[in-house]
Structure formats: structure tokens, C-alpha cells
Amino acid sequence: MSTTYAPHFIPSKTVLSTSSSFSSTPLIMSQDELKKTAAYKAVEFVESGMVIGLGTGSTAKHAVDRIGDLIQQGVLTNIVGIPTSIKTYEHALNVNITLSDLETHPVVDLAIDGADEVDPDLNLVKGRGGALLREKMIEFASKKFVVIVDESKLVDYIGASGLAFPVEVVPFCWKFTAHRLELLFEEADCVAKIRTSVETGEVFVTDNGNYTIDLYFKKSIGDLKVASDAILRLPGVVEHGLFVNMATTVIVAGEDGVTVKNKC
Ligand SMILES: O=C(CO)[C@H](O)[C@H](O)COP(=O)(O)O
Image (cartoon, rainbow, N blue to C red; front, top):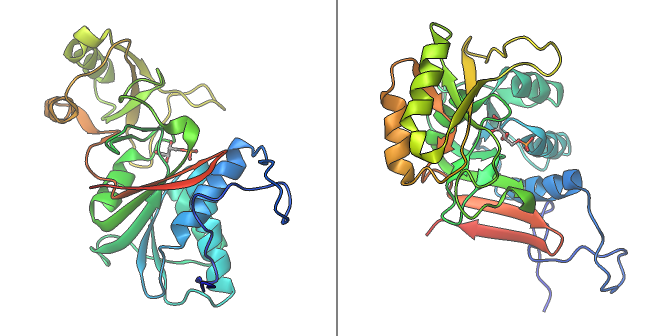
């Protein structure tokens, strides 16, 4: 029996092989190819007439490109994009996606975005790309939030990668706020560092005019909801990169194919 798929459908759980024949030799894909595979899979959820939250980062960029291509081909029509950063705004304009904002379109049908860490319960760390505040606002407003990652982003627990856990703070007395964050996570052996721009070495300024404090933990931060609430109670904190219970679906691309994980 044959099955008909939408024109932009990629079967999940497919091992991508070296050729279109029945070779069982898996193709070693680069990390960027895996990101692209996850992104294309997510775009299968996009339907004409939808308001789409457009994520930020190298994985989300593939989704924006794909949506732009499908609009150009006439496969998707009447799409409105809500960009999560100035960078995504500029890129989406370049690929001719009609753009709007949350004030004009307060309900978003679907948001597609990358992540830095994904735990087994689909909780996330986001914001190493510097856009966590707008991402959280737009993804919170979305009926469905599809996260796209390559398998390197999967962790056993939040913080396990040892990479940055970002917190957006107001510039005023940021060293004081950084110190308060270290004290808050003393038991996790937390070190707080101000984020600087790789290009200029200057303090990195977010799209909202704020700074980012990157936290590094040597131990688990414990209950995520408790941690999230405690960070938000600190005066000077604007938002943090922990996205608890927000993802409805996570699409993971790995060497063995694409896995779609849905929140129960
Ligand atoms: O949260 C983000 C930006 O603020 C990104 O989604 C996250 O950093 C993942 O980026 P990439 O897809 O480039 O690995």
C-alpha cells in the first residue's frame, strides 16, 4: 500500500543512506546537516494560514529557510512569522516571510526553535544564542512549541553539558546580580560570568539592551521549577534560559534517523 505525504514530508525514523538505493550503510552527517534534518521535519507541521514563531540560532535558521522556500514554491500560503530576535527578523525578511509581532498576533499557532540542552522530560536550556527573552515570550504564546536539535543536545539532566546556563539581567549593578546568582546556586558550585562578544570582546548586549550572565554548574541545580522561580525573584534578573514544561514536541536528528518526542 502506498502512502501519500505532503510535498515537504520527510519520513521519521529513517536512516539516511549513502544513496537512494537500498544500501544499509548510514551516511555520516555533519552536525549542521543533522540540524537541517530536524528543522525540515519540524516545518512539516506548518500549514498555510498559520502564525509561526521563528526561532533564533543555526538550527532555527534552517527552518526559516525552509519556510521561505515553501512560500516561494506556493506550497505554503498566508504565513505570518513572529521573529524571536533582530537577527531572525532580518533573515526572515530576506527570504520573504511576512512578519508581525505579538501585539498584532497575540496567539501563535506554532513556534519552531533550537535549544542548547534537552532533558528526558523535554525541559530545555536556551539562550546561548542570546535571544532567550523574546524566545520565551513568543514560545509561551504558542499553541505548539516544536524544538529542533541534533542529538548532541540531549542531556540526562539540565546543566549536565557543563555549558553556559544564561540569565538576562539589567546592566545596572550586574556584578551584584551575578554574585547573588552564585550565592543562590552555591550548592551546585556555580560560577557566574558576564557574556562578552566573540568578535569585539565587549560586553554582549541583547536585543533588549540587557546583559547576559552565563552560569556554570558543577553539580545538579535540583528541582527545575524551584530554581526557575528563585532566579526570577532576584531583583535585576529579567529572564533566564530554563524552559520548564514549555516544549510540546522535540525533534531530534541523529545518525540513526529522526525521532519525534511528544510531551505526554
Ligand atoms: O536559544 C537559542 C538562541 O537564544 C538557540 O536556539 C540555541 O542557542 C541553539 O542554537 P543552535 O541551533 O545554533 O545550536
